[in-house]
Amino acid sequence: MRGETLVGPTARLGWFIAITALYLLHQDIWLWRQPRPLVFGFLPPALAYHGGYCIAVALLMWGLTRFAWPSHLEQREDR
Amino acid sequence: MIPAFIVFAYLGVILYIGIFAWRSAPPSQLRRFGGQGGAAAVEEYFLAGRSLGPAVFLLSLFGTNMTAFTILGSAGHAFANGVVTFGLMASSSAFVIPLTLFFIGTRLWALGKKHGFITPVQMFRDRWECGHIGTVIFALQAALLVPYIIIGVMGGGTALRAITGGLIPYAAGGALVALVVMGYVFFGGMRGTAWVNAFQTVLFLSFGAIALIVIGRSIGGFPEMIARLLDNPATTPLLSRERVSPWYFFSYTFIPLSTIAFPHIAIFCLTARRLAQFKRTVVFYPLCILAIWLPCVFLGVAANGMVSAPRIEAKLEAREALAAAPASMPAADRAALRRQAAGDDVIPIMLEWFAPLWLAGLLGAGIMAAVMASDSQILALSTMFTEDVFTYYGGTSRFGEAVQVQTGRAFVVVLTIVAYLIALRAPQSIFDLAVQYAFSGYAALSPLLIAALFWKRSTKWGAFAVTAWVAGAVIYTARVPGALAWFGLLPVVPMTIISCALMVIVSLVTPQPSSRTLARYGW
Image 1 (cartoon, helix red, strand yellow):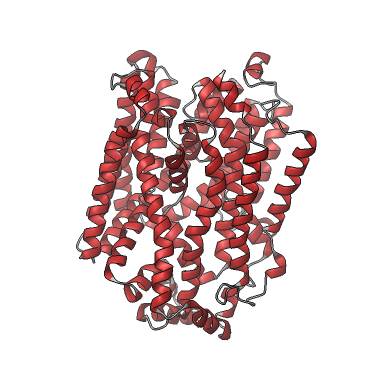
Image 2: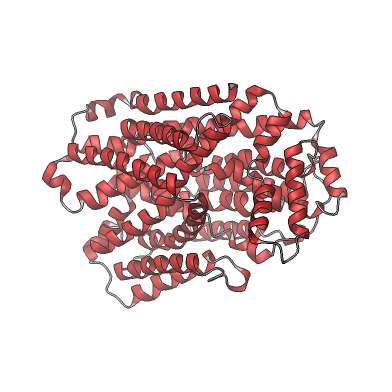
C-alpha cells in the first residue's frame, strides 16, 4: 500500500531506529547472570528490567500513535 | 464446594453475557441487521457489524490472546525455570504484538472496510488474484487452529474436575464447558464472544494483583522469601538467566509474530468501529501483559521457597530426586517424577494453602476464563469455513446470506462436538505439542501478511511457496525431534527466515498481479 504514512523520511528513520533499539534492548545480556541487587527489596533485576521494558514499549507505542498514526487509512474510508 | 458454586455462577454469567450481547449493538446496527438476514446480518454475526467500541475492542483482543498458559503455565514454567519466563514470553510479546497490530492490524482493518473482507484468505485471494491457493492457505490455517480448540475442551474438563474435587468427572466437565462456549458462540457470534472475552480479561487483570497481595500477606512479605532463595545455591539460578542461552532467549522474540497471523486475531482486527480504536489497544497492550504476567511469574518463582505448603515441598523433593536420578532409572519412574515436579498447579496450591476460600473460588473462575479461550478459535474457524469455502464455492450466491449465517452456526455445533469427542479419547500431551508447533507455523506464515500489505511485487506463487514450506516444516519438526534447531535457535527462527526468502525469490521469478488489482491497493 503505497504512500501509507504521512511521516517524513527523517522521522521514519527515527522511528525505525527507536524500534530497532528497543528490540535490541530486549536482549539484556549485561543482566544475564545477576540475581542481585533486588529492586524494591524483592524483585530480581531481570524481572524488574523486563517489567520496565514493558512500560518502555507502551511509551514507544504512545509516541507512534501520537506522531506517526496512519490516519489517512481512516480518512480514505470516510471519503 | 464454595469454589464450585462460584465457577458455576461464572459459567452462567458468561452464557448470559454472550447470548444477550447483541443488546449492546449500536441502534443503527440493529436497524440494519433487523434479524432479517442479508449482508448486514453476515457482518453482524461474524464481525459484530464492524462496530465494537474501544474498551471492548482492547479487552477482548487481549483476552482472545490469553490462554490457560497465561495463569497456570506461566507460573509453572517460572517455578521450574525462574525469572527467564517473563523475558521469554511476556516482554517479547509486549514488544512484538502491539507493533504488528499497529503496522498490520490497522491496514487489515482499512482493507476490510474498503473491500468488505471478513477473513485474511479473502484478502489474499483478491490481492494476489488467486483462488485455489487461497484454499490451500485456508486448509493450513484451519489445521493449525484445531489443536487449540481441543485443548480448550480438555482444559475445561480437567479444571472443573479439579475445582469440584472430582464431583464432576472429566467427561461431564468437558461437555459442560463445550456446551457453554458453543451456546454463546452460536447465539452471540462475534459480539457475544467479544463481550465474554472482555469480561474474562477484567477477571484476569484482577486475579493476578489480588493473588499477589493475599499470598504476600499470608507469608509475611516477599523480601524474606526471595532472600531465602538467594541464599540457597540450588535456587539462586532461578533469579537470573544463567541456565538459558542468549540465542535461545532471542529465538522467543519470533514466536509473537504468530499472533497477527492467527486467523482469530486477524479477523478480530476487522471488528473495530473506527481505526482510532487501535490507538489505546496498542498502548495498553504491553501494560496489560505486565499486569497479568508479572504477578504470575513472580509467584511461580517465589513458590520455590514456600516449603511450608506440603504439596509444594513434595514437588521440590521430586525435582531433587529427578536431578539425582541415575541414568538406569526406568522411563516410567522418571516420567512419574517429572509429573510430580511439574509446577502448573503451584498457584492453585498456594491459594489453597495461603488464601481464604472465596479467593480460591475467584481463582476457579479465573482458571475457567483461561481454559475457555477456545471460543474465538471456534468462531474464527466457522467464519473461515463459511467465507473461504462455502461462499467462495458458490454457497451464498445459491442459497443466500441467511443460509450462510445458519451454516456458520451449524459449523460451530459440529466443530464443538468433534473437538469434544477427540478430547475424550486422545491424550492431552499430543495436543500440547501440536499447539507448540502451531505457534511456529503461524509465526512462519506472518510473511504472507507483510508481503500482501507492503510489497507490491509479491505474487500468489510466492504465497504458495511459503504455505507449502510452512506445512512441510511443521510436519518435519513434529516428527523429527531437534529438527531445524540450528545454532541453538528454536525452529521458528529458520522457519520464518526461510519463509521470507521464499516469498522474495519465488515472487521475483513469477508474474505480479495485474495493474488494476495493484491500483486497488494503492500502488
